Length: 78
Image 1 (cartoon, one colour):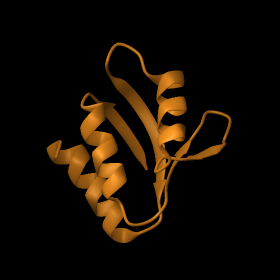
Image 2 (cartoon, helix red, strand yellow; image 1 turned 180 degrees about the horizontal axis):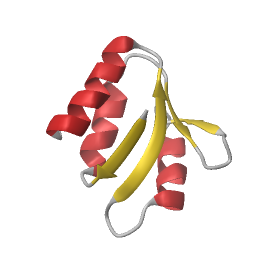
Image 3 (cartoon, rainbow, N blue to C red; image 1 turned 45 degrees about the vertical axis):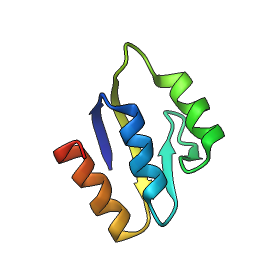
Image 4 (cartoon, one colour; image 1 turned 120 degrees about the vertical axis):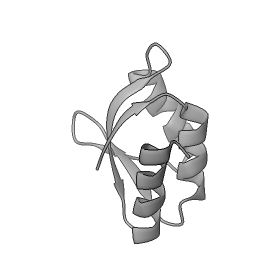
């Protein structure tokens, strides 16, 4: 799924941490980084973070409840 215009990065990672299953970031090169790993979070955000906003990410969640949680965050910001 594509995630766009994330302005609350702390809340985004809180939502990721609450996910039960694996959540991955797909890089531009097609690599997949485990976003539940703090090291991967820091490395991935250092590479794509600019001006306090993340314009677009492609992430993969494997559990339905995690997908629902991420969609709720994108729609409600919560």
